[in-house]
Length: 290
Image 1 (cartoon, rainbow, N blue to C red):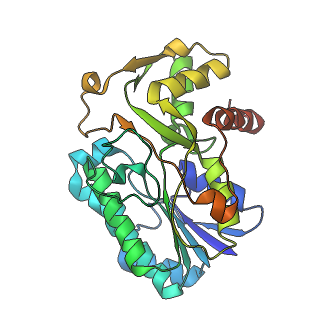
Image 2: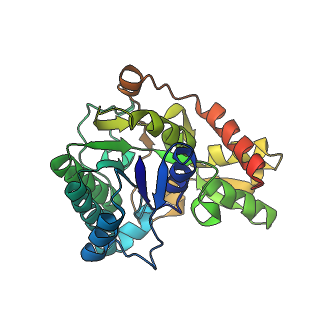
Image 3: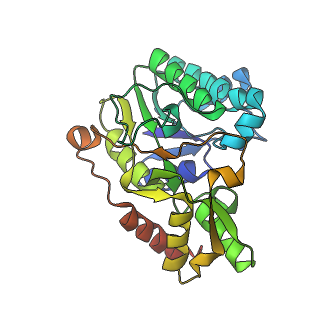
């Protein structure tokens, strides 16, 4: 298959290009400087010229704070861009893979959200832009895989997009990383997501699916675990509280997701987060990243 990937320089997009590229013809979209997805006509022209069978849409603004500070830019970067890519997919009758988020839920309960729970009442602008994007996909594209994703980690994305590599770089530079220690969530390896897509794209079982490695993490805890696993002092990560960090966007203190559908539909069972993190570290060492 010919597969186009938006946000191909990001954590998930780059991993999709690498993992799926062993079997498919991957077409990373040009950088923002060469193709502005906000431009409807330019976006349409690129897709009509390249004619992908599948579009994996990972581009967007995933930073809740910048979304909160500039809602207009958030709606443009996340929802308007999704509309432009959805229209191209519809014209091409392409399968559409949409990278969504756990932030479409309000985080108002202790048990995990699953695929049959209603997405509603996000806590921040970012969540609202992604919920609106989901609705565009569900309304206009029957052939879609809408992926709800938690905290992501992996080997890809480089220093600007990879929190693991950022924490390591900060420690090597003698600078501490401050991360929330009082917010509990699920997490998922982008490698596990990309490998799952390799299976899912061979089927027509379209719909919404949740992705999470087994286990619960805090932002500071998983960074400390990473540093310790690569023989660095975990104290280079300083746990803080959401209140102390005083960030612009509201955060969910406890939000978990799980899948009721991946295993029975595709035979996919995601491993524990500890196992996935060890695999990421092995990949980073094999790549020479660490």
